[in-house]
Image 1 (tube, rainbow, N blue to C red):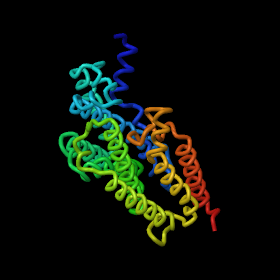
Image 2 (cartoon, rainbow, N blue to C red):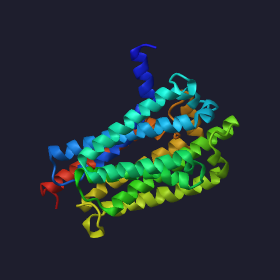
Image 3 (cartoon, helix red, strand yellow):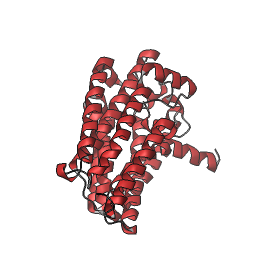
Length: 310
């Protein structure tokens, strides 16, 4: 295998496309009053640390799930499951990612290193057992997003409202439920269960959980955007961003609907709610909603900072 193909295979095994999840690290910097190069440099380091530690986890998880992935209609094409990368080489690559992540995070702050280590511990526990425990598996998935947000706060040395952190955690839980729901539908359609935890779930249960976390995450965001009176955003003008959050939740639920999911799956097999990062990278509706939300919150934040809001 040529060097070029080896690098492509290594990056594919590291699931570089899923690094998009780590942009959540920059959220804290957007709302921080005192902007500086130092702040953004630390956030970039935190972003890199999470990219590398997540790649370490992905590789370890793929090694553990090797036999199950080989029976999955899509996962069997992954580099480790398909045999395009040897187990020894995959382990060596994972160790490189681990060392890079810990080294970079330690250069920023001990608190960031601690956040990375907590993430590592939870994900290792998930890989070796918690992913087979119903409900706990959902919280493990969601914790990864929450710790990314916390890492952003640590790196930017900012102060975040507990309502915003609660919103991140609940939205992450929403994505985790949607992921399991899509996996269960795929397993039922194919007649092959590739995750043991799916035997403990049913579509009615996951739909009830989905309704609960979608409602509570929206309410938590609305309370944050209400402003300082509720220990939320710096200005109640942030309520202007609420419709975009609601539209985003509705859009994602549409994409997870069985008929819509089947239609999209025929057009693009990778665009499924089993892979939230693929939805972010490929769905135009989600992208437009996210960009509109970013423009709104950044504009309100800047106007408030310069005292231009009543």
